[in-house]
Length: 202
Ligand code: MLT
Image (cartoon, rainbow, N blue to C red; front, top):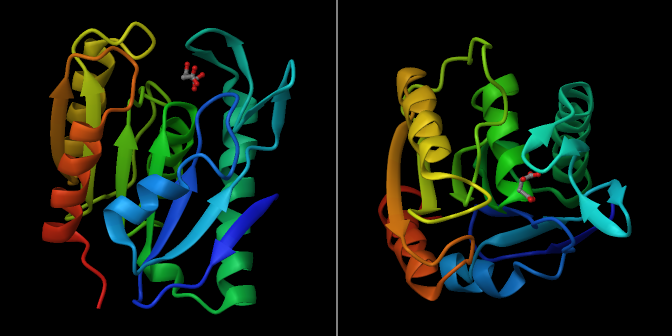
């Protein structure tokens, strides 16, 4: 997959996953605000939707192509493993930072593959799959940044996601803003404070 890898100074690797129409450059400043000493693996989604990069296909706004989601989730999981071997970072210390479509594939990694991440920062995510049994996520720290008035990721999606992840054993913290689907500085500051508490790299 197209990507950027920046070697850091501590043992954590931030897996950056952009939103629809973005690329691997978008979240680099956010990574710096969350943990400037971590390594960064920033990936570009392999799906092209009318010229916009995405991590998996959708049938309509908010309606996911489940078959493609499953295929792309495996592709991403395999890619993280290959990158860990190539660049020599610890596969067990990967923390996803995803926005919108990127948050949805990060959520999909947890729903399908369980604890393949050390933690996850999900910014404006939706429920990636419904009606499946989620693997054990006991003790996995997850931060969700959501908007009470997000038209793309409605508040109920956040509540359902929090409930699914919590039932699977994850330790979920939700930060609510009222800036629609926008990623705000306040939200990133809260994600950063959560990271300092739960994810700090040694
Ligand atoms: C998705 O398709 O993943 C969500 O609707 C969010 C987005 O528009 O990227």
